[in-house]
Length: 161
Image 1: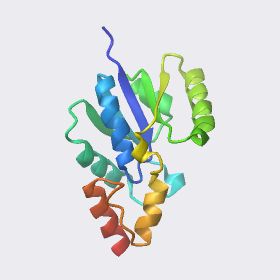
Image 2 (image 1 turned 135 degrees about the horizontal axis):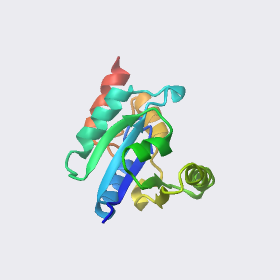
Image 3 (image 1 turned 120 degrees about the horizontal axis):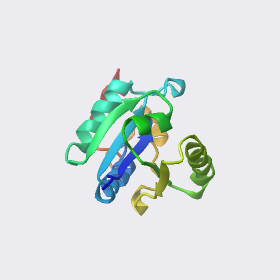
Image 4 (image 1 turned 30 degrees about the horizontal axis):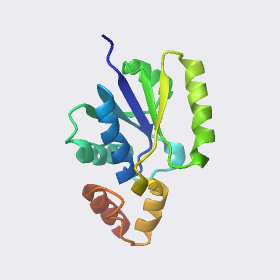
């Protein structure tokens, strides 16, 4: 019997409680979940890839069937290399759907064996985005309700520099 392995890709700069909500729920649905952290140099992330990997690994260490891995290749190729048959995407709002629908279609055209599944975050996380978290942290605001404790500490250390 084939295992259902889901890849949850993103920049995760930083990982938020909204991401954790999706990952924890996905861990109940799939045999394995790979949190695929894109290097995303074009986005000029606040945290380098190594730091984003470590922050995610620390926040997810309680989930046995979740692993974290960095990537810098085409997502469909990465999924195939990892033996994944599902790409998991989060939808916070209707505005996310158009872009995500295009991505799903493109990934299906590249590799028809990979399905895209959308999950919405729990209601209390629908407004959280990494972009907003970075902005609040850079202005020395309190992000403790929006990110895991290890991420909050890392953000405080980074903006204090």
